[in-house]
View 1 (cartoon, rainbow, N blue to C red):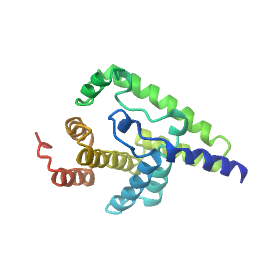
View 2 (view 1 turned 180 degrees about the vertical axis):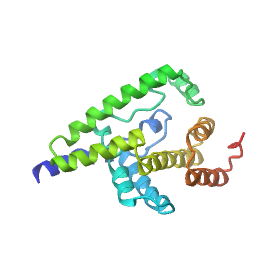
View 3 (view 1 turned 90 degrees about the horizontal axis):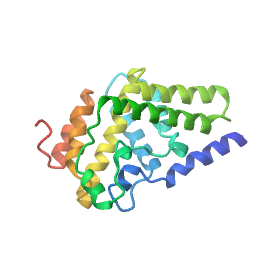
Length: 210
């Protein structure tokens, strides 16, 4: 029980860790990582129920997918090219980072290694069966080993996408363009595409298919 309490204590730190993507976009009082996990889990349950998927597996994946960020932090695609100058950073946020395939692969591998080590650290004192289950679910999320892992990967991004549009409506920031470029590049699951189409209608965006 002592090891479980220590684990829950560490996981609780996510409640006070702001999502970095919103920080670099100068969003006031941005959501925490735990805030994101809550709605991503809710969306995963409800949207996943529309398909023949293992909902228990999806929900477990949702709950643990960002645990590694307790130690690894929240890493964004912009981190390797982010200027220190606030004006230049603001300009950069208006574009979706276009990196070479080689650079993208290097960044993915670096992120994967850092997050895997962080997850191993936070779970190291858990019972072996539980530790192994968490690691396996996270690897499934990262690698898309099952249809549940692949589905939640998109749902995770859908929650992030919805939050971006909500902040845009409230603060006129972040810029919409990069997010819709990203959406066209990333989403391919039928439920996700339907969801994105409805977001386009709700937030009056008409360039999704251009």
